Amino acid sequence: MYSETNLLTVANLFLVATIFFTFMYVSAIFLSNRKPHLQKWPLMRLLFWLTGVLSACIALAGPLAEAGHHDFRFHMGGHLLLGMLAPLLIALSAPMTLLLRSLSTKNAKRCTYLLKSRFARFYVNPVTASVLNIGGLWLLYATPLFNWMHSSPVLFFFVHIHIFAAGYLFTISIIYIDPVSHRHNYTYRTVVFIAALAVHGILSKYIYTNPPDGVLASQAQSGAMLMYYGGDLIDLVLIILLFRDWYQSAKPRQQEEEACLSTE
Image 1 (tube, rainbow, N blue to C red):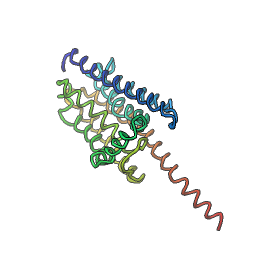
Image 2: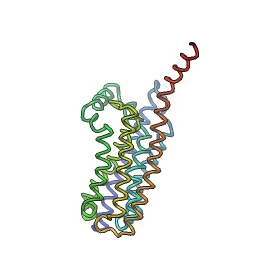
Image 3: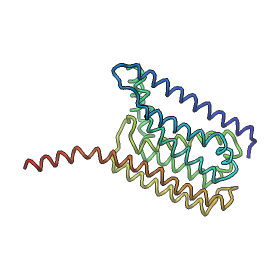
Image 4: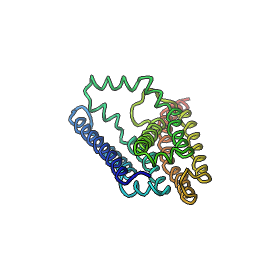
């Protein structure tokens, strides 16, 4: 384990980053709201952003983060906040939509071009996002990486950046809040989502019986249960959002079919 000073330094880096991006988000709202042809940015989106950032901050700095450095149960609580809840809330805040609204037409076109690139298209594919997200967790908890992470502030920093980024990527690959370059159909996304849920559940059971290096069995069992049931709660929200959009996309077709039948 590294010193409390190093832990505080890493926490401060995370706090500076979250403050910076929150400042950018609020500034983009200001620029967007100044454009008369656009509607005012919804307050709910801002609330999603703030609660998402707050969830990440609780996981990365403060008492929970400090306790998670010594106790696997608190570490897993932070994992749920950073890797699942914060990405979901920030995805719902639609940051890419806000960015496009706040930019000039010329810069918005450049940004759209990047979103359509093969690079972006590859990473937003649900399969790629699932491998990065769930595969990264297997790498963390089923190898010595978990122990190494708590011995190196640099590794700790990048692992947590990856946990959030992979969680966010996975979320936006399943539910489309912001514009995407290629919309995969609902069946494809649902199948990948179910597979990811299954592998996530298997990992929690693996942790229950095979604690990571340096973790007490009792803490591993409690943490694994928290991962299993807590993850299910957040995934339930994703399922509701995914199926709600699926239902709404199919609704006009149903109405057309009903109208055709009524005229026959």
